[in-house]
Each structure stands twice: as C-alpha cells, then as structure tokens.
Image (cartoon, each protein chain N blue to C red):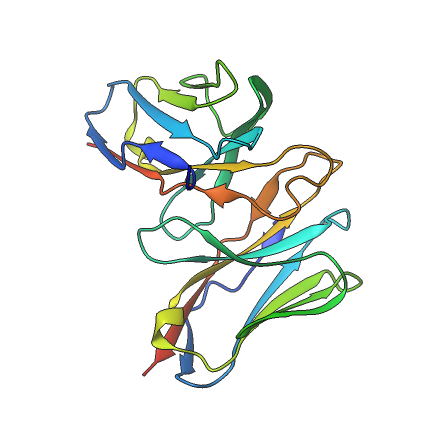
Length: 112
Length: 117
C-alpha cells in the first residue's frame, strides 16, 4: 500500500464549477497535510496545509481533513482555466522522520 | 533572498558523465531537502540535511549519488556515471528546523531538469 494515494486523473471540470480532489494516506502518525499545485514543467507550489480535523478555507480553496478515515480533500470553487494543473497531496510525519511524502498527483483540467 | 535557487535549470549530459547540481536555500532555513521527480510521478525523497549534517538518505539513492552541505548553507548533489534512468527533475526544498518546523510545508526551488542521452 502506497503511503499517499491519489487518483491520477485527468479530472475534467467545467469552468465555474467546484473541483473536488481526494487523497488517502496510510500512516496514522501523519500529522500535517499539504496540497501543492504543479504546472507542467514547473516545481510544486504550496497552496494549502492543514493539521486539524475539519475544514480550512483560503479564498477559493478549501482543504478538508478526516484523520479517522485517513482522508484529505481539496475543493476549488469557481474553477478557472488557470487552475488546470497537477495537484499533489502530501503528508508529514514530524517527530518521526520529519519529511514530506508525496502522492503521484491528480491532473485537473478546467474546461472553458 | 526571495526563495530557493537551483542551478542549472537544465542539464543535458552523455551517459557515463558526472553532473553536479547546486541548491541555495532560503537563508534562515536550516533544513534542506533533495527530491527527484519523473514524469507522471510525485516527488520522491532522496536526502535531507539539518545544517551541515546529512540526517537521512533514501534507499533510492545509489552509491553513484552523493550530496553535501559543507557549511550549512548551499548544497550540492552529484551524480557519477550517469545513466538514462537518472533523467528526471531534481528538486531542492528548504524549511525551518525544530519540532514541527516543517509543519507549514517546504518551499521548493525551480528544479534542475536532467536529461541523460
């Protein structure tokens, strides 16, 4: 079982709709959770982090964490063509090995 | 200092040659990480430093790979006798140290894209 699992997509969403990206993780010791956005040929860019159960909102982005289900999600409201990218889910197990483990990423395509 | 810098941005080399990449982290960040990313995959951890100490090295890192951070500032990643399978994006990231120092995520550099022909 991979430590961080994501559906590779592509996920196609009409412009203006809500894009929903999901991620599961295997290590219950994971304590911080991240979403990175990566445009083709570019490096990952941190867009959200969360460490408490529940929702965290930042502009059009909402991260959701459910530690009991070992599930993290990212919602993008009012999707724009510029949101088309690969979204990487990542987890950190600090006080263990303190490094971030990434999933393979989900390709998101916003349809104009 | 506006971020993590990596040099070069692109490197094309012939199989069997040695290559070296450089990373300059954010100046106040004590931790420095190297990752490798191939097409369609997420970044894979290679190694990391706290100041000048190399704290962990992935089993992915063969003996042909070596990383240094001699004065706790910039770091170099060297690949000896390159193989076609080494072709990838090599990413450097940095973060503050201390318990939970990475809790807010890493800042990545622009990466070095290596092509071995």
